[in-house]
Structure formats: structure tokens, C-alpha cells
Image (tube, rainbow over all chains, first blue to last red; front, side, top):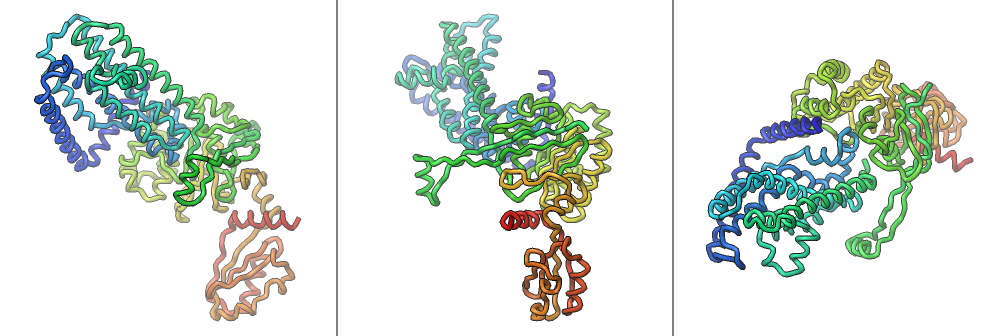
Length: 263
Length: 338
């Protein structure tokens, strides 16, 4: 474990050096990112200026859920973005060989090798939304609220990462699976709003099948009301754990099916 | 001597979906896939004693890389087993790969965007090489592979020869007991090839590293390997020394003569002059060049050259390397004639 933490530090350092190697690209990327995020916030503002309440939810509550959904999403985006490449390129081109010849866990290696600073844009939006909405909500606050929030963030991030791990691993059999990952990942858009606004089928899917509702709506509603901790928090922990267990299983089976590519 | 590498009845099958040509064929394959099993490696067994350099040869698509990938733990064998350094690669991969080095000549494991030395710094951590040992190792690799000139350059700016040397150094950083080199000299010029051959030999001699090397260049084999295993269509067709291979399949050379008068070519009748069959000596014209292929077991280079010089005016002369493909072609002809 300590070795992996040390390695992670080194991978991050290498990533930053790489970033500096292409300064112009980095600068343009950062500018683009700020513009994208500014528009996103503007967009949210325009929408909610038209709809002051949404089936019983106030503007601030909606913003809180939206902001909360971005915590796990941005963390996942920052740390595990390289998983996309597994499904799009790494397996198909046989580049996965490299990971299999190194004495560290393959999944860890793939994930640690790259970071995505684009995620800081989402984090910025997230911080703005939360710092705007939290003071306006009269949320119950206890000594355990913050530790609980941290636990939720860890498991919610695990839900995102696990979905990407298991769908990328499909590439070990099919050679490419980027589009499957993309399709399922997009379901996270549903997580930004209260689950109750959707019809029953969508509710069931984002709660029990692709449990994105546990990355935002359920834990967020617990923090707003203090109700239903077992389902809202416990559900996030269970969903994260189960998803991760399935993801590891699929990944490890996938390694055995990996066929490399001709050279 | 104890065996470092031990492969028993290795077999690898791939499922392949047969598609008819064109978009229509692709769509059809999507709904009604016709599957075919392709045997890339068919019951291959061999052993490599500790400290030996084994040449692994065969034509393109023979299954060389597939065998290497099974030995390095990248692929699961369909059946059969291999044991290297007392370990089964597929069983405890992380532990196993600590003691092996792998180079795929067609790919790089270097960090593309960073200065070369950064790659070594990361690999040092991945393989947990202690500081002191790392310093000594880098000094040694520097000396053997001459990395100093480009160690601070970003990998993307390296020439192919530099990149290959850098990749070999990367595979050796953690002092592996076994080194797998898949076409380490592909596409390189003669000087770099020489440099790499010397490096491989030096590492083998000084550290007793067991090496498996695939190549299409017989000069690599001649310089480095006491023993070769030849495979074709997934099957082992030869296992023994290089001289044994030449003895069995003939040492075929090609001489190229540039003629002053191209029409003089018809004056050359090697088969009649040396009383040999077409299989043993043959000539063909290509513009002003006369290309003569012959078996050195039947007629010497000297005799062929002197006969040619006596018969026609020659402007230039070129002796080609023995090609493994040529030996394999002959192998086939033998099978047919047997």
C-alpha cells in the first residue's frame, strides 16, 4: 500500500512534467476549460431562473444536488481518465502488453499513468455551486457530518470508477468497448437531478442497475434532511462496494482473455 | 546444467470471425458470425539452459511472438505449460515479471513525452531498485549501450536506433535473470545492429542472463546464438545449432554481379559448369544484375566468383547475407522432394 502511494506520487510528478513539456497546449486547454465551465454555470442559472421550484425542491436544493453530483464525478475524472483509453485504444492496439510485463497491479498501473486536469473545471463548478447553495439551506449539522461526507465521496467515486473499469474490461473480449463505456457513463446525467422527477423505469435503473443515484441524489438528500441514513448512506457504501467487486472480477477475467495484437 | 526456461506442449488458439469482403460482409458477420479456430502455436516444447542465448526464428506469422507472449505471461496458453526461473508466468504474474526483461522491437515501453532519463526514474520505482544499485546499473548500461548522448532528450525525438538501445536498457534496469527480445534489431542500420549485438553478448557474458531472441537477421544469430529453435506455422521444425541448421538445410548464399554487358548473362551456365541441379545453384537476371543463388555445401563462393569473372565482364560484386527465409524456402522444397 505504501509502495503504491509512493508510486502514485511519482506518476503524478511525471504527468505534471509532461504537462509542462507542452506548455501551449496546456494553456489553451486551461482557457478552453474555463470558458466551458463558465457557460455551464450560466446555463444552470438560466434554467433555474425560469423554474424556481421543481416538484417540491427549491432552487438551492437543486443546486446542492447538482453540485454534490460533481464531487465524485470530478474526482473520478481526475484520477481514472486513462480507463477510457483501455476501451478505445490500449487493448485493440496491443499496448496492454506493457502493463502485463510490469510487477505492479495492471488496473492500478493503467489508472495511475494518466491524470486529467480537465477535472479541475468540474471541481470549480462544484465548489461554486456548493458554496452558493449550502448557506441557503438549513441543513442539520453534526460532528459526524463531515466524516460521513468523506465516506460517501469515496464510495460514490468508486461507483463511477467501477462502471468504467467493468465496461473497459469488456474490450479484453471484444477488442474495443469505448462506446459501451460512453453509453452507460452518460447515464450519470440523470444523477444531477432529484430522482423523483423521472418515471419509474428510469428510477429503478439509476438506483439498482447503474446506481448513479447513489453518487448524488440519495446522499445529498440525506445531508439536506437527515432522513433515511441507512438507505441513503448505506446504499452508497453497498453500491460502491458491489460495483467495485464486480469490476475487479470482470477485469481479472478479462486479463486471461486478452489476446494482444500482432507485431 | 539447470534449465531456466521450460516449455511443454505450448498451444495457443485464437478464435477468428470470418468476414466476407466489404461492408456487406461485415454486417453479415455481425449477425451470423462464422467462427474459425486458428492455431497460432501448435504443441511447442523446448528448454533453455541457464545463461544460454537462444535464437528463435521463423517466417512472419509463424507464431514466434505468440510464444514469447506466453512465456512472458502476457497471453494464457490454450493448453500446455511453461516454467521460467522456477515460476509459472500465468500464476503469480507480478512476482514472475520482476525477474524478467522484455523488449518488443516494434513497440516502446518508454514514456513518450518525457526525457529518457525520466523513464528510468519511474522504472526504478516500479521495480523497486535501491538507489545505490540504480546508480551502478545506469553507469553500466550507459557504458554498454551508450545512452549518454541522448539521455536528456525527450523520447519522441530519439532515432529508431537510439530508441531501441534505450528500450533494451529499460528492460535491463532491474537486472533480470531472463531477457526476452522480440526483433531487437528490426529496421536498424548495420552500425547500430552491431552495437546492440555487442551489448546483448556482454550482458549475457557478464551477468549470465538467459536470453531468448527472435530475429529475421541471420547475422544476429551467427554472432549471438549457440542454439536456435525454428518454428513455422506454429510448429517447431528445428532445434539445434546454427551449423546443424546449415548442414540440414543448406547454407544458401546469394551473389550479385553487376555486368558490363547485360546480354552477357546468357553466357553464364552455372548448372552445367558445376554439374549441379537447379535446386543447388540458379541464376537470374535483373537489369544489369546477375543474381546467383547457391548452396555452399555443393560449391564454394570462390569457385562461383572465379567462374563468373572468367566468363563475363563484371563491374561490381555483392555478397548477400544468408536469409532465414531462404533456408525455410529450401526446407519446403526438401519436404516436397522427400
